[in-house]
Image (tube, rainbow, N blue to C red; front, side):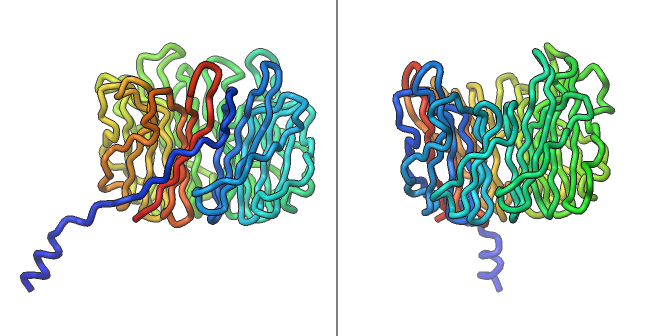
Length: 426
């Protein structure tokens, strides 16, 4: 009995991971930018824009079929003769979908894990900033059409046959000039969140949703209306799990703010209604650029925060589907700038990456938890380079055993490449 008691009081074993080498996926002496990553099964897909000359950009994709250990050669998805940029990628099973800007909105689909792609489809003659979401055989592409210096008009087209054909373009704005910041699809329903930053200088955060059975999208739901018309609300993120919809955003007290907060609202009925606003940050200083992930009943929200003096990465966790959150936890706690945080969560494993200037030059820092955020591994520098490493993104495999981190490495003037590292639980 005594040995059992002593064993029960022992601390849990440390969460250990193995890290693969840093891979240069673009490998060109030019300016590579605007990368995105998608994961499906053991396949990892990375898309980006490359600038071989001042007036021409290309869209490329590289695919790994062995959980990020190795990558196939780059595939040129754009025409190669016209400027192409702003790529977006989504993956579902064997299917991979990529949209980008090239004399309108172009789209290509693969049905064999990204080995080959169908010819491009022109979804719109005009538009910028495409987003792609996919589930089963359903594909959704949304984009913005500029209406002047600041205003945009958001459109969406849907395919229910694996991207072979698309329905008509639908207006998402009701004339309010909303720009979508994120889109996701789950359980035969698509969700969009964005802001009306183009309408005036005081944007609000809106959400819209539609199921396959419904003839039209639900009306725009203003999540930030109660925070006052003089407070800009931007950078919304959305996550959906089962019937629950979670949204976080950044809300400031003015266009030139002295205070910005991270606000959160949730819906328990697939976006039909939302509960009250929860303020997750301290309400002083600048809390900016939140990220959001959900795993089971746990909701994770991280952001950059300078309430303590300099910008650090702060995390809060809910273990009851967003009903209440833990106290803020400083994950970076470095004397330099920390920002551009990205989260992934799968089963009990949470991974956090951010850019950090603690060593002088900007590097990509990393921490992970194997117990849903209760404890975290020590900070690890993933880039550890003398050059500037920025804009990191982290994704995870379905069960969380593998993590995938991408970032932009500024190797020299006008030479930025897309870098990648894999992480595996030991």
